[in-house]
Length: 320
Image 1 (tube, rainbow, N blue to C red):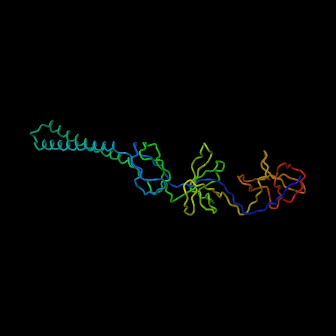
Image 2 (image 1 turned 180 degrees about the vertical axis):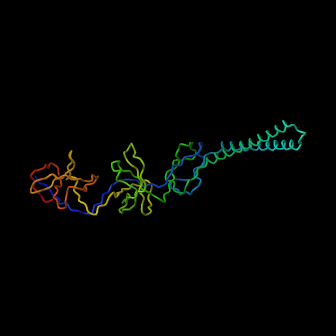
Image 3 (image 1 turned 120 degrees about the horizontal axis):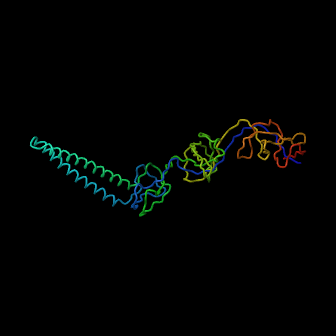
C-alpha cells in the first residue's frame, strides 16, 4: 500500500485555543427607571457621551409633586400643633403649684406627642422627596449611550430597560470556551486578536473568567483585555487565539496519523517496508497537528495518514 511518511523533528510549538467573541465595555449597565409613570423627557440619544450624574431623562412628576405638597402641609400643621403644645406645657410649668399634677402630666404628654408627630411628618416628607428624585434618571458614571429604547411619552415601569450606558474608555472581548477546555484556561494568559475588517493583530490578556459553566450552552464566559487602548464599536466581531502553552522543543504529528483504540492512541511507523503500530501519548487539542508527549523519538518515520493501515501491513513509501 502506498503511504506518505514524515520524519518527526523537534521544533518550537505554541498550543492555541481559537475562539470568536465580540467587543464589549468592561463596565456597562442597563438603566431602568426607579419609578413608574409617563416618560416626560428623554435628554440623550444613542451614541451620546455623558458625564457621571448627568440627567438622562425625566418621568412626569405631577402626581408625586402633589404628594410632596401634601406632606409639606402636614408637616407645617404638625409644627404649629407642636408650638401650641409646647407653649401650653410651658405655661403649666410656670404656674407651678397652681396646676394639678394630672394636668401638668397631660400637658407634658401632649407636647411629647406633638414632637413625635413632627418627626413622623418630617419622615413622610423626606420619603416623598426621595420618591420625587427617583423620577429623574441620571448617569451612574461617565460613558457612552450604546443602546436606547426610551421614547418621549412612553409609559414605563421599574422592570423596563430604557438605555444601556457603557464606559467605552476600556474595551474588552467577551467570548466563551467549551467546557472541555475549562481546565486549560487561566487569568493572565496571552491572547492574539484580530478585529473584523482589520488585517493587523492585537495582543491582550485573559482578564476575567466566569465562576460557572452555562448549563444551556456548555460554555465558560471570559473577558480578554487589550494591551493597548482600542477604539471600536460595541458588538464588533473579534477572532482570538489564546496561548495555552508554549514548548521550546516538541514533537508533533498530523491528526490524520493518529489511530484511537480501546487501549489508547497510536501511530504507524514505516520500518523496512512494513507498517508498525507504535503507542503514543498526545495532547488532544482542536488543531491539525498534535503534540506527542511520549512514544516517539526524533527521526521516526510516521505514516501521515493512518486510514486503512494495519499493523504488519506491507507498504511502499511515496514521495509527498
